[in-house]
Length: 395
Image (cartoon, rainbow, N blue to C red; front, top):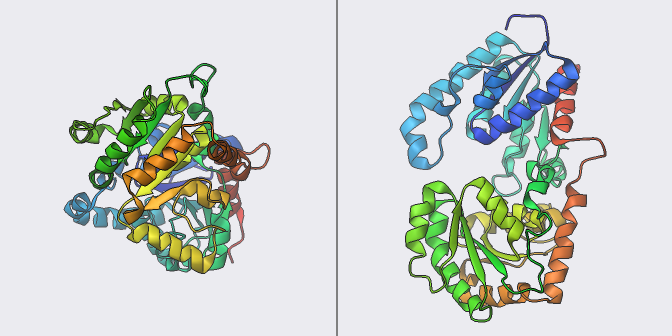
């Protein structure tokens, strides 16, 4: 890279990484001035801020086994192209952002060929969920790791991973968008309760959960004559979901798009959700919920690893429960996912019950648990670690 200012290479592989990377660039500019030179792999957000991308990020931004296999030769070429370009640029620091199948393959090869370049990982792979051996392997080529979940530094310490810093989660920092303004969420004592139904964002999840969720809603509605059911759907699955709910006794209102989903969260009184990041969104929104999932290998693995490594004080596959170290949210797996069981718990949450009040109180603790020190933002905390890595003596 030409110029005289500090040089930073940021390598991302998908839109979420481009967003995190763009916020990091803004914070680095605040700390280091506008003379910083950026190169790497990024999308529109980072390139708009001055990052010179080695190629279009869409070449490696693919999801699903079929799509990955179809583009595998190109992805492999892009890994080696990125490695060569990073080594040629010889930056003051390399930051790899999420997408571990792409970015970590780049980092390993850069470390082998140019060990003097400090490497910072942004977003920890879920070593606490599966393949815990990755933590120790990462310590060879990642100098500093930026974690989004507060329990991850301790997990990496126990597993022999790289130095890990909790820098906050984007959802926690932007939780105001999930919380109701005055008048958005109808007072609980009034009629017309709103139940959110979130059967997942993948086709396989929809196939496994949509039917049982429909039966559950039918049972809940027997005791809630004025129940309003809202189902936020990802746009590429909308048609599939509409076909799947066509025979539901109680028809949900289907909404699409991120803004519509957040608006639904701000109105909701309770939720029935598949396990995933959405449980953290609901928790930060203050919506009590019941969580269910089918096909157990992944989540049983989480429970087994928790039993061995004790990264949480409770065995759970639900993010808010893991973060809080308490079984705040009822969760059901595989054979436990039965309409009568789910409906029984939802009916309790849709009444002015001790269980509802207790869950809401526990979820309110997330702000404290996930809060960064006063004066720190997520991007600021991340930038401080990157700057420190640039100036550290690695001899």
